[in-house]
Image (cartoon, rainbow, N blue to C red):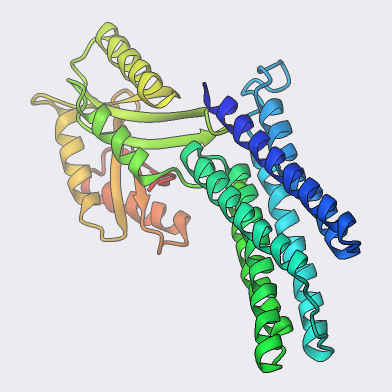
Length: 367
């Protein structure tokens, strides 16, 4: 069973649980002539909506790539998670409004044995369902399942708070219904915003996992002939589709055939181990006792002394043009990149006045 099938199976379990709970409430409500319980049953049917949205989103995300969408439809999962997060956020806001009303106009709750039994059953079912769905979402890295599971847990917490406040009211004649409801509503709203942030960040282009970055750097560095890994960039087109690029340092004595074999081996390993479609670029490191190697050593050492520069790479010497080009990654504290580039170029030019100097301001998109 693949990831999508597991997500759909979990969502179906959520739908079945909500439908069974709704049926139980409806039967009890009709037998007890309780409109409130019947309406709560209808609410449980609407709770199944988040699971339906998850299934639809998962199915749509499985559509194969086409001419207009060459990277596939994996990001549809993020839209599913956004919709469910908005539902949770809306529920929190609605609950907060109603709770505030109860603070200023408290009402005495009236519970029978039947209604208490229904509430207890609902709390148990929702807690179990919410924990199961959320745990599956975390394991499968599905924002939609996580949001759906959280939705069920929040339903259980709200119902439990209502039950607790009713007990306090019956025992001590103190109404905490509105206050407890407001506090829980604020927690739900906060959680809804956090749920919304995760898929939105993925769509905007969130920074990749530092654990994954460490693994990529370590694995690529282990290849024979690689003397440094730079410019790691990854684009997320869904939980199962990562496309990116990186550069490696190799000695300038390697042949085109050897470089081809190295870059192909790296790309194959990245796809096999991480599912990443990786393009590998090359920076040539000057070796031997020659003008190119001497310039490289001189320029790299001079630039590395600057505290505002966190990385120097990509040195290249255009011999016919008598021009040096090198990439520098400035610290985040640097705001005027043009001024820094000009300053560094002038400094290097003073060291090697017979050469033209180009300083390329690069950026670290991963760390």
